Image (cartoon, rainbow, N blue to C red; front, side):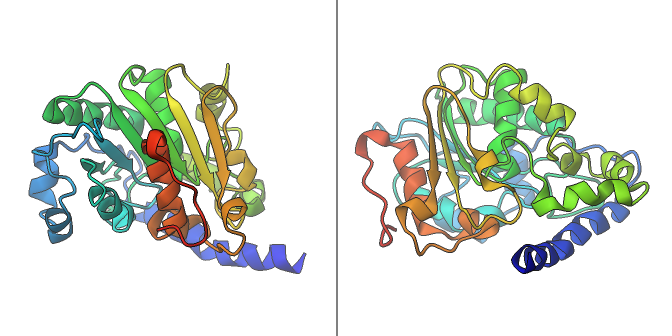
Length: 300
């Protein structure tokens, strides 16, 4: 009980941050249109992306890695900060790597993924089409962290993604929603809190267990034909809880727990997407299964 209460206390600041951000957003907030490759470059002339070769729209996939990889950030993330570890890791292995911003709220810079998930999925649809056009390929591989590992399933099921995606790799994805270590069950005890979330940060409400979006997404099965699915989870996840709700059921699915590969891995929800070299190695294995190598505590 003490452990659970301790974990709950660590989550309260995160929830408060998410709620506090909504104060800056107008009541009728809507996400901005999907960023274009040219718009990304103009808005974010980041030396990080230029130096690493990531978000290089002249990149052409090689015979060894024939599909571009699109990275999909999580809630409160963005196209750059979420991928400072994984993007260069994949570029160094010969991949054409791209990332987008989605789910923006007016007046809230840098912290994205807060808009309605259906609208975010449409933004992803537009972005994938632009990456396909730029690279001259017919399919992408998607790698997403947290919401970014689940939202692409909405894109594939409802917004034209079928046939355009070869593989989806989810790092701590909230595929069946989250109870945020029990905090979401407290919402009824705070009058108006749920309505506040629904109105001002619908992307948060859409990720709560039992939301309309999640019920619709998972009705009839977790997967769509023709896509290879990998879920990489950590048992220390304090955001998408219980962590096994991240797993998918269906054909061509691989569910991985990092601690089954390395018992001393202590990554939690944020670290698995930002810095965990075992998660990165498993991602590379999922993107190129023909050349996969065992993931151990010394993988990197």
